[in-house]
Length: 328
Image (tube, rainbow, N blue to C red; front, side, top):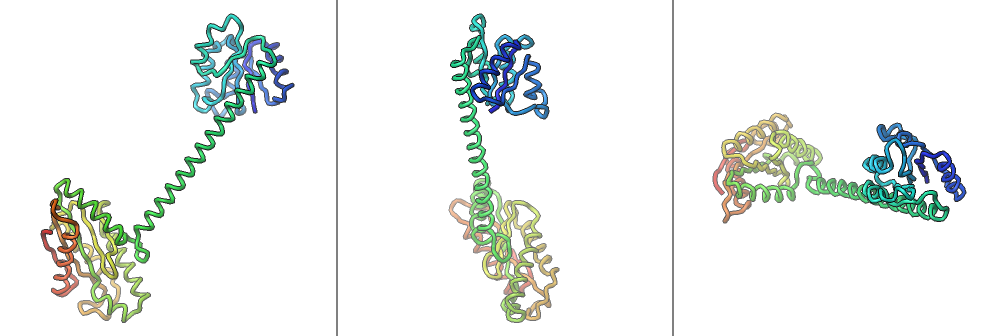
């Protein structure tokens, strides 16, 4: 582990280096001034740092900055904050120790240093550094694991809310979404609209073209419905079979009818041939619109029932059309 000695006296630098080297500390570098130490540490420009340091022995009486100020300047750098600083203190400088500890020093050694004391302080300082590094690594690993788990959970959430065939929201997501929007509309006394959608004569389409083409038709219709919604707060979901549902938060009856007609036209514009349809030579949809301002005594199921009845009326009136009801 690398040790930096910041000591003004060449003799003291040599003595400290000798003591440490004899104990097996081979990565020892020295600086004769705070300025040289700052350059080595890359204090002004981290990219210019010569190497990582695990422990600093810092002379309290370093002339160009003073030990306390130098200690503070090193400790306030985020990337050096965990490097233990041991002050080298002469007898006349002991009254500055409190300031040095406040500046970030973790220990001190009296000058001239005794071998046993110096090595004990160095070993303790390096143990602190190893433990801090270990904890940082554990924190980083834990953070990364947590991040990966969160990302995996988010992916699972997205998958669990998507219909496997059409890749739009599934029934589970629809149920959760309309319940959430119902409660919000109830709090705000704002309107909530829903569109129930059914592909016209879809059974006949399957009988004519086969289930593989039927699945492709469902995917294309779902895509058109999804693209037809322009507000981030709207939701298109596969309700079941060839039925779809759209939730329009904050939309009144007139606005919901406009959206429904847009969706009807987009599906018709797909121009998917449908020889088995009784209303068109292509795939079309029927849509029922329901709108309400939620009341405390009602529930989302009431709005679903209204939109479903409107859909039935659209189909009874000839299909490939939008029918709107009001109230839930």
